[in-house]
Image (cartoon, rainbow, N blue to C red; front, side, top):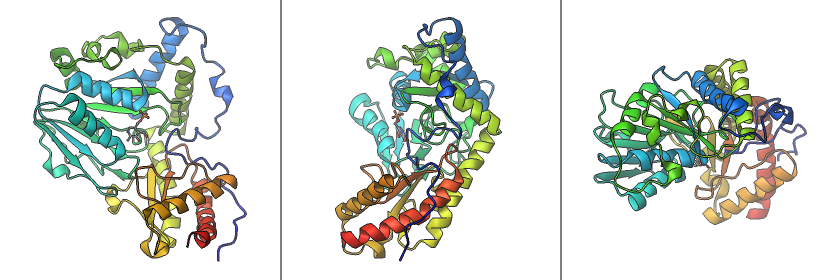
Length: 386
Ligand SMILES: Cc1ncc(COP(=O)(O)O)c(C=O)c1O
């Protein structure tokens, strides 16, 4: 019998996005934002350029890679890449969860490039990357936020590939080691690992990706918002912060604040270490808890940012998926009411259980404090469910 815990997590925000803001964040972080000014000149333009420069510096991207800000978050970035750059050669799309499936559906139903191949994986597993053909353009998700399955490393990606690699790294960038030489187009949003505000995306392009933009135009129409063609020009203003459309200067200021925090912490390796320590703190509870299991079965590909958990079969005997989902909802609700945890429900299309963000802005002590609350709420709610 679990007693109601006394210690609450100091901050119960474990959402997978927008994620918790960095430790110590307050509205003061935005005090210097150049609001009410145009983004086309003066201090706002300098701030946008700073956001771009600091992104590259913190992520330690190669000198010959380039960064720019895109509209519409990670989806805007991925779709900008797909619409502007695919179509010249066959495409392999790998999907590990609902998000990767969006790119797969974009390819199958909208773009329909010649020679399209798709590789989908059930929840908890990785697609079969061994089937990849690097003469093709290849699309994949580094960390599948909804399934909690990540790519373990880039060893499978050919150095001498003819096609380009398109990597959705939205819940991986700043929290996992990314092998830049293997990635031609990398995208992410501000509201994932750095706890920034939503609606802005980042694209990072290799020299070959920029060459594609210079030398190739797809046959399909590309809406203005997804047009990356100017990024083929090595001196394009987009790399200095001249964005495709109007950005939020408040969000930009907040993102710079997050990047400054990341640098103060000790850079990307320190952010990765924080993430690993967070996942380890949660893992200590998972290992000693017999009613819960990881959804991702292979430890090598188990995400350290979006940790997904399912019920152990014996703990929910007699409950079908719908009933298990109901149990998860009740547990999440009671933990929210108790101010112990917010937003730990899985993605709606994923199996029942919990999804707990362990990215760098979260504190390990809060994850340690969460376990006993989950035990308590499970016992309380399970009694009602059976
Ligand atoms: C892996 C992945 N890709 C894409 C998205 C969509 O991102 P956005 O809402 O920033 O467009 C998400 C959102 O959680 C995600 O986790």
